Length: 306
Image 1 (cartoon, rainbow, N blue to C red):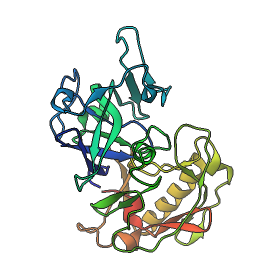
Image 2 (image 1 turned 135 degrees about the vertical axis):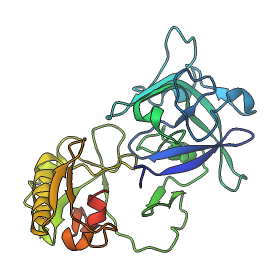
Image 3 (image 1 turned 60 degrees about the horizontal axis):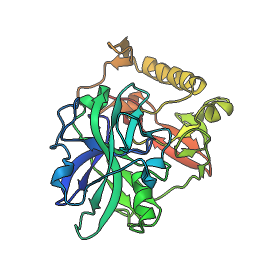
């Protein structure tokens, strides 16, 4: 939580080598730094070296994998018969390199599955600065990591993420039991015409037990409501955000807290106890309503950050 992302350890190659990768349901390309990367940051593990893996093979332009993501995978005259990828993100970071196929080893080290992923030659922005090695693309696409495992028959076509607080959690591939036997709520996925996203139907925003008067169209505009595990914050459409922010301001003012803005122009308040033990007395709970009657509860520490 402190660093704003959740990551898993991916075992790639023969012999298997560990790579820390951010679990991202908002993108579909998996990649780690290559040993000859020209512009890569300092990450947790040594780069991936294709020549040191007995099962590594470059993906060529004529290979079926190269046509799986036509907007991201490409071939150029300067790299004869070598399939490359390039991906950029809304916060302006990017990654590019060559596609390679190698085996992924499950934690038991008994099951090995061929997967296609990027071998980075360059990265910029937060991708360059982050400590994890790369990204685990878990988006809604046949090229996504979980889809490749399902296509190979290694798992049923399902996965789940369990996020701990303030840390921990689990990435479950296939129909694995969820640790702790939690109580579930369900909301259906809906089709989106915008990219390879998992989208759901958000219907309401509730603050301190009162549903805010947000127009229904605010939740379906643009991309709709995207489930993106690689994004740190919840982003609301402008009408919903303005009403929610006004409610938070009113609660903070009633509690006698002092408002200020930081260098990022975030709205902040001072006046709480040093250990923040009284935060839920100052800021009421909120919740987000989804299709099927599902409510995602948001206590104060889930819509504010320290």
